[in-house]
Length: 185
Image (tube, rainbow, N blue to C red; front, side, top):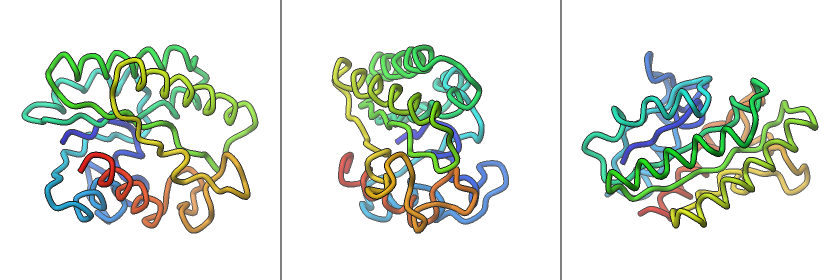
């Protein structure tokens, strides 16, 4: 499987695709551990927007049978439109399907450091992601709901959040990985 995305796919901040780190800080690690049949190529890069992620699709999917697409938060952080981010995600989904891959699309996580306008943009983009998954008939991976704190909507609980407030903790990545294994395994 090819996992294509930003820092959430990469495993940031405890794992860096260029320098290594704690491999448990990747949802791919936990998905493969939950279902031994799953093998992943981690093509996540910290800080990338959906247009930058899309540019790497071809190299990431060589030899893969499944493509997991994740991204969008960096578009929001950089003030880009959610419509453009959704269009980029849709294009990646379609390209994966054209290549004969089974495709799954993850939505954007809750963000503990966001401002109200970011929270609105995340919810708007996630609605578009759900629409893409439905219209393109691909699997939706509900990363947002998996890590959302029921007592603090739009935020992750402390135990599933890295101290930076932007990324999951190892426990958060474990929850995402187990979701992926249940969904794609």
